[in-house]
Length: 321
Image 1 (cartoon, rainbow, N blue to C red):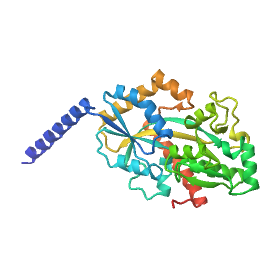
Image 2: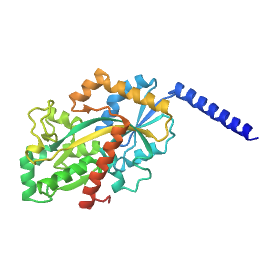
Image 3: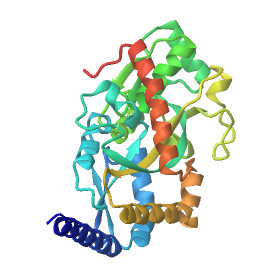
Image 4: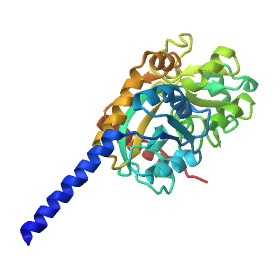
């Protein structure tokens, strides 16, 4: 009896393995969803739309972008976390993914709810002021903030996002006080900046570089240690506030438990997409530095940033209202 039971278990396992292998070999047989947990117009949406065509070609099926904005990306991230782990739901995350658990009562775990595919790349952040503000340099902005604490306001894509926390870090290091005005995503934040509703934002270079080229806003400084080739005359924030660096990132994840062959297919398709000359040239020209990391490297970065920002959030008593 024990031998029969053991044989049946082995047979059952073999059948399951064969079925899994067949499923993975056939993948994908239908369109793949790419969840962007922010409204159209922001950095993550930019990455999704830049990658989607070539990613579709390398996956072998069309990639459908779904914008699911709200609560600094937590709503769309939760939708991805509870999706079937079959490879038909992909998720792009912003750097806010590393801090959301410190601010929101999220219904997923930052790490155990997902398999980390790759850190796609990083973006230097830029300090941008509205034309209506009359602040055309970082020195002028900081001088105004020192003269009238809390008068200078800045927009963000939501509480806890890099557009929120980077100005907090800047204010701490520069010894000034700024007023936070949150919006529901990067697109509405930029609209508010261009309309003069807010004086400044700190946003990723790919999102704002067009405004430097068209003159719709004042891109006054870059958050890297060195000047960037896309805007070589732009001074660094480090030259005004020593030691200050502002950088954002975008990465890809999938719901935890995607079969290994399917996961590898997704990973390979993403690597080929990021290496494609058309994609690479466009993203780099817009200020994006492609990283294309391993899953371990990506997860480790998120863990390190989670610890850093959790400390600042606690020190500044930042809460979601």
